[in-house]
Amino acid sequence: LIQILVEAGQPGLWEKNANMRRLWVSAVVWGMCLWGGGERSARAAAVSEHLPSILLDSSNDEPGLFPSCIALRGGNPNEVPEPDALSSLFAEADGDKEEPHARFISFNLEGRLLHLQSPRRHSLWGHLLWNSAKCMVEYLVEHAEDIRGKQIVELGAGIGLPSVVASMKGAKRVVITDYPDEDLLMTIKSNVERLDLKNMEVVGHKWGSNTQQLRDLSCGRGFDLIIISDAIFNHYAHNALLRSCSELLCDSPESRILVSFSHHRPRLYKEDLNFFEVHLLRS
Image (cartoon, one colour):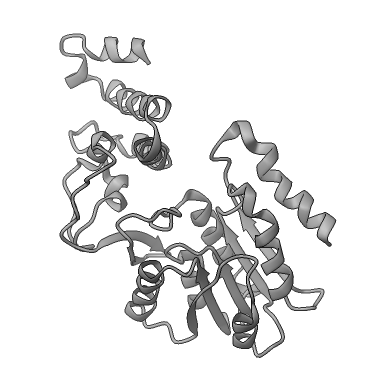
């Protein structure tokens, strides 16, 4: 980290060497992850999710190096922001100013640009679009025939991108759930209404709690497919999450639980994978 920062300070190197600029950005972000605590560290970790695309998108060696960070800023989704998306890394955690407009995350689905509103900030990270959710979307697009005509529920949906894609790919009914927080649920509902998706319901659900309301939305038979994206890093909630899964999945050999995840804390990868061990024991 120190070597990169020192070399970047050499006369003329910063202006001429795009690779050094990209390395410097990477070093700063990871330095914030190591040094910062609390929300500052969380913001650095969130931006680090975008680092691979930031580095790759900077191939033209021009000053605007951060096209991939458009999702990190608030404002009108039709306006391209200035390339200062990393500036929030250095803001103090307390007393942050409110953004003047709604915050949008953009996602390109087979040529159609989806603009999904997101909470400005949420204690359960529901305002972020994680890479594992993007991987889930890719899987759903590639296996659209497996979701066509099916009843689907997503647990811990955040902004609900996988559910939106499942709806667009022909699911019979899609129920989006997340923690019963009013702001979070209202944001998800606004996305459903904006995209005019008629086969979707938005319901608050705390993992492990009563699932009767959700089962009623499946006509009492349970769901053919349960989607979980980037939720198993909450190790303490594994049992509660699996309890909801076991009550919501329909009794059919064709029913499935799709789980996508990444190791947010690599040193705890065994605890992440314990989710599947617990599932096998419960089964």
